[in-house]
Image (cartoon, rainbow, N blue to C red; front, top):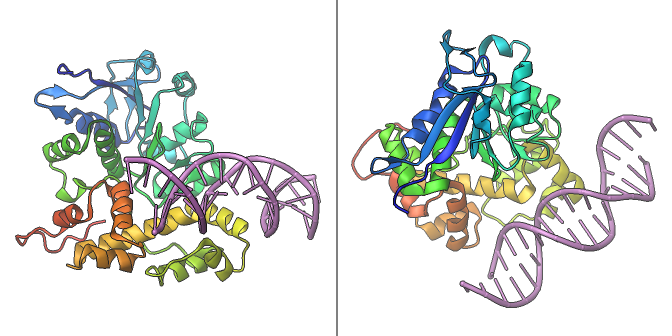
Length: 333
DNA sequence: ATATAAAACCGCCAAC
DNA sequence: TGGTTGGCGGTTTTAT
């Protein structure tokens, strides 16, 4: 076990790639090491092996061409920005479309930001949950109705396909990859090496907290607001559906259309968000927080929190409420 | 940790 | 006739 066999990662840089995004995988994954051994070998390529322009006003010359797509175990596609997004979506060259088609089945796929468009065009996201930069969400939905887009999250891990929201979320996703592949210790060390803010250390899925979009203009909005106001009670699917006078079947379907989540998934996510807020901002006991967030027991809270952010409640609180006064104005997540 | 029951999920399809 | 609805029920997930 000692000589680490690095996980093979290819970064496929498209024309007009976002300058920030294309460095993220190499930087974050490259920081994943045990002693001096790297856990990832990251190679960067373009669709034809030639140079491409970036959104930053400079070109890059890759060391590799599309042949490394056959070598890779994970392929990462950074977002495309700037001129090429003029029509609201990226435009791909013939060579790029070919390269995308060439990625063998079974390779793990990762996109950052608008890189999700490339995966979607290749049909890799059909029927699957995914996310992309919020500003392109509407366009994405229209172009790829078969993809279960959820613009409210920083990233989506669907096993062998992972997508992230804009720019900085690519960092979160890469850290998540490290955590998944090699564990929290390695991921935390990588974050530290990159001087990431400590609150990212514990986070595996840092969901964006924002007010519900157009709460009553969407068909399930009223039910969602209603549920949020009584999170501490037990809320059945039937009750939510009845509240907006829909059949359970229709409600489930509409909620999925609008949020990308099933009803219990959505509800559990709200409960976790509330629990996180209480952990971050109060000293309430875990049992009490579990009750207020609507988890029947602390066991349940522990389970859901762990699956969302990868740490136990008190560990989570520790990273947000450090004993010494420090960054008192930081309001994360 | 594992068992059990209940709840939820979602493809299918006939009916608007 | 293209789109939505909502009951059915087999499978999966969740709670205890």
